[in-house]
Every structure is written in structure tokens, then in C-alpha cells.
Length: 198
Image (cartoon, rainbow, N blue to C red; front, side, top):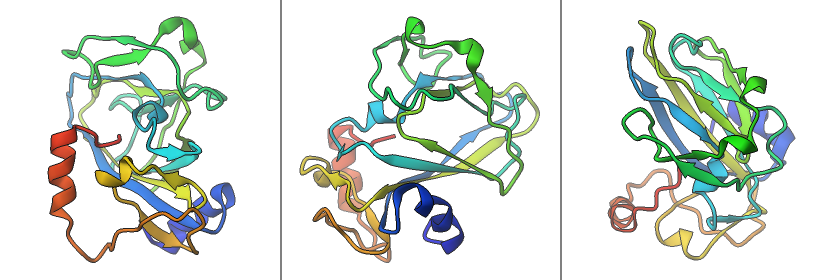
């Protein structure tokens, strides 16, 4: 997540001063019966940063194909970011809500097919989703989310979320965590607040 090869992908988009907003693995076991409904990541980060300018690097650990539930995107929808959401069945979906159908054109969806060690990048406001894994291969990816250090982490978010200076210098007066240290207290706070970002 701090490797020059990754940061070099991000720098042309957000500039030379880069903060790591979050990172985590996303894994769909073979035969996983749940979909990821249509959403914008920004919906889950509302109130955390200003402006909402976050780019995600989605690095494929396994092959990511239509059969095992690769990500789908609706091109040119990143000018929205805070669409209206309605409920969906949590028995078949990872999240409990989805962007309302009249606000999107599913026929324009593009599958992001990746081989291991290939990556895609998407804006935090882009509409995206994925189908369930009906194939015989696990689908695992590592997401690394970055923002310019000119983006401000809100005072409230600072109580439960940490960011890390990845390259360059700070411009917004953000506090940065030390990646060499463990911060169990933040994990406890997130459990209490139920705010984890996405």
C-alpha cells in the first residue's frame, strides 16, 4: 500500500501528496451466494472527508471474472456520489440498501475483468456492484484507497478512523497514524460507533 509502484498509479490522479485512507481484502469464496448491490463508496464515507476525492486501487489476488463475481461499473457516474438508496434483501445481498433503480441504467454496466496482479482504479463516487460468485474459483482482491493530503478528515471521523501519510507532505492539517504501531483502541471505538467506512 506504500509501494512506489502503487503510488505512481495514483499520483497522476490526485497529485504528489498522498494519504492512505483505508485498505482491506475483499473475498468471495467459490459458490458465495451474495451479491454486492449497486452503490457508491462515498455513500458510506459521507461526512468523513471534504472534499469527497478518494480513489480506490483494486488489486486482483485471484482471477476476477464474471463467473466468480467480478466488479461491474456504470461509466461516467462519478459525478453523482450521494444517490438515493432503497432497501434490498440481506439474504441475497452483502449490504442492506442499493441505489434506486430509476437512478441507474444497468444496461450500461461494464465488467472489470482482471487477472492476478492486475489492478483497476475507480473514483469513490462511481456506481459499482458485483454479482455472487457462481464459479469454482475464489475471488479475492486487495483494495487500497487514497486521497490527496489536501482533503480534510473530519473531526468526528478522527475519533474512529485513521489515515496514513503515504507520500509527500500534509496540506490540510490532518493527523496521521504510525503504520509501525498497533492501534487497538481505534478498533474498540469502531465497534462502539459502528462507523467503519467501507
